[in-house]
Length: 252
Image: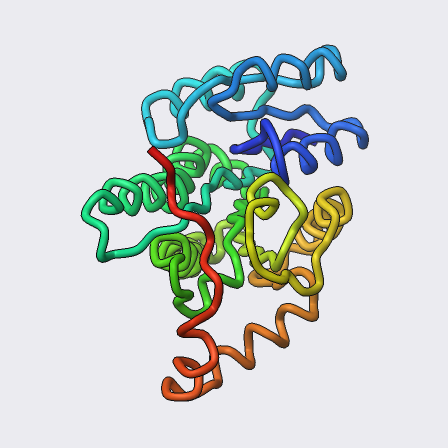
């Protein structure tokens, strides 16, 4: 099996890389922190193809994709996992740049990750394109305008991509995690129900990917929470969530 994972230097991406590597897969890993990718490569000699890059730079991903496919062949699974979560408040002018940064990584980063592989995967009539979204994309959350908007956009983008790939033999899988214990959630100053350990989450994600589910919330309890949030009328949703604690804004 050949797998490509973006955002693979920590958190969910790293856990997914370990999961597939432990099962004998060859894995291409994309992330900005090249030293962490090299550490992973040293743990699995000959099985890891590390590419230090920024998913916002399409040309860098295209070059990495061409190199990986020339050396290993067309991937079976491409996982667009790279993402950031930063608190934002629209009333602060300086947060405009943060909004742009979050949208570029969380949405365009997925587009850039998939694009170089699609033609070859269609030719092979096989594979999975996987986007890691979030239940935060179901409704807007206070102090998380950029993150909620980016994940909502990613969910819609993945649906469009699924329609575009219909009949090609390539399945498009959208995974919406709830709370996963990673450095991204460690800074959240509020309760996080149904928290999953990252290795457990990776195993669950892999099962979803193997089955080729078009859309899945993990864990299932958060699917119920997400449905309830979507059904709430605006007046009640506003009353319940307007004063919810916020993720910290970017510093500096």
